Length: 314
Image (tube, rainbow, N blue to C red; front, side, top):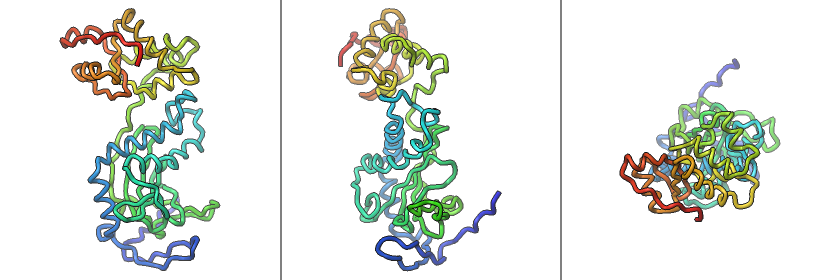
């Protein structure tokens, strides 16, 4: 293993690289505890429901890149997802974070929080490596790491001082990557490792996937899907992935509710309807307006919950 770079501590001199407009003056690295702008941004972030907002933003970015409704893909580790696409999640992430946090795209960096310019960087790499552009050196940066294998993410806030970065000579735009030591020592935790919203299609076996994404019509494939995933909440986006490439796939999936009810004794509850959301809640399932869940008929009887009328339209 290569030797670990010695940790550059607060109080050391830092000289950012030259960028458009000239070279910034050297400065002393301030301890994060004494960095007023860093602390102000961190305080604002953790005062929000930041875990939920960043979780949704990260899931949005992953789903955007996978484009399941067109490609049948639902897992970043799918061999059909090439490395460039996987890496592009980090690029797309900044836009989803800005939207979910109710911020605006503000130059010279990605956004502005409490009057402080903030860079946003995401990565799907192992370790603590984010690529920082020259304009992001020594700036307050929100660092989000996605672990596609474990289907989770985490986030930190750090002032990415030049002395805490490495590399830069091997890429055209001269970005430098964060060093693991300073990230571990000086980054402020924003969101600890948190599971991303579940993708129920990942629960299917290889044989089940062959059926759900097979050659049969979508009504039949949707019937099998809900049979396999009984009592599992399925987001609309996952259903759109199963129906990728078809015109109005949700119409066919709604029609599958008939055979599920009549032939499999499975009652499909859809969050679009208030009474079905309430029935789901009483049966132990928290569904949003975008979610579906199939529940065995006997569960309604056992819980004393009325079976909603069969609906095949939205």
